[in-house]
Length: 418
Ligand code: GAL
Image (cartoon, rainbow, N blue to C red):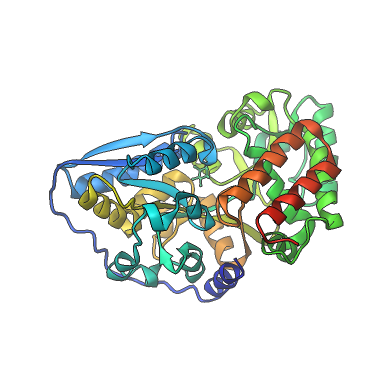
């Protein structure tokens, strides 16, 4: 993890635009290609279909099977996939977050390393060094990254802020002032949809970052910041107070369902990853603004989606060609502007991206980069799940001391804390 952070920092300093020829070549073939992901919402589904179009242009004879299991952050998909892998029935390629998440799928047992492909495609020259470091697990690359997402964005309704003569809060104190004003006027200040159980943990990452700062937040995952730290309790107390400003139907809504509050100008702010930007686009909603959540200025909470190659992929040649498309400039330029993410490659044309994504690309190069836990970058899946469940429970219990103790125990279970 430390190497990852160091790598990301080095990368952000050494951003080089490497123009490597795309090595996707078109040999018409037949058969199937089953791609497994959880991309069913607006924006993410369009992004995936954009990448499929690039594949179809190159391999028109191949039938693509779009195997999706709905549920943000892979809440449902990951379990289905694990069962398919252990049951000897894998798809040809599947979505996995870059980072420690891959451990869940026992890569040595079920996946093929992709080191040779990374060499032959020249990917070590076009993906950021920090991302390459994040992708290497047990000395190998196991997946091909298609994007970089930012988890810590506060989306807001411009209409609501303008109508109430308010500006997006930069600190938690400002947040509570703004929230108080909006609540009194009948607007939901802090929109949440936590139906799937991961969304509270997602928003809380931003509260931790905003309370501890980038270095101490990273330390929570590497063992240099104890979970017993008073600032963790402070972050939980802040989050508890924020939760008093949410919509009453939050437990019934998914992240995108909750976004409708902003579209309808009935809600003001939502902390969500930048796939929300892809979703807004898919709804033709343009009147949104974005800002770092309180205390998050200058910090980019990062994650990356990637695709793996199961050892028993039934259509291996098609799967290899899919991975080449996924890592190519053409594939990433077709995917990311719709997905609401920036390219994993450093050579995509910025003119294809909307103003939000252009600003995200700049922030990625200049901000302090920290790893997202809910989205597979910071910790093994077992630890990430314990964190996720603790925060999901916290939404209803509000028990700061107990939640902090659970988070500390999870760190111990992971072998990172004493
Ligand atoms: C994340 C994933 C994103 C997006 C989001 C919501 O885990 O990395 O690409 O799909 O979940 O589903």
